[in-house]
View (cartoon, rainbow, N blue to C red):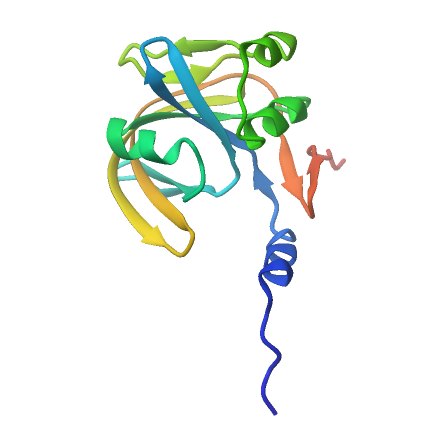
Length: 167
C-alpha cells in the first residue's frame, strides 16, 4: 500500500515542531540604505573555518543583493522583539515603521550593517551559494561576532516563545 504524499502545508506544519531562534539578515542596498529579512532557516556549519548558513526564498527582495554584495549581517533577536521579526518578515520596509518600532542599524568596522539592541551580531562574507528547491542556501564565513545580554526569541509551532527556567 503506497504511503500518502506529504503536502507542502503538512511539511511546513511538521517542521514547525522544531524550535528555532529568530534572526534578521541585513545587506546594504545603497550607501546608508539597508534591506533586511527575518530568517529562522539559519544554522552553524563549521568551526574551522567559522561558517554559518542562511536560506533565502527566491521571491525575497534581499536575494539579488546577497548574490551581488556577498556580505551580510545576522542579528539574533531577543525576547520581546516579535514586532521586529514580523516587520522584516513582511518584506515591506519603511522609515516610518522602523521609527515606530525603534529599529536602529549600525555598521561593523568592516562595513556590514546589523541591527542594534539584539542578542548577537554576526558579520559574514558569502563563500558559497547553492540552489535548493525554492530557496538559495548562502554559506557565510563569519568574520566577527558580538554577544549582548538577554534571552533569545524562539519560534515553535507557528508562535513566538521564550525560554522557561527549570529549577
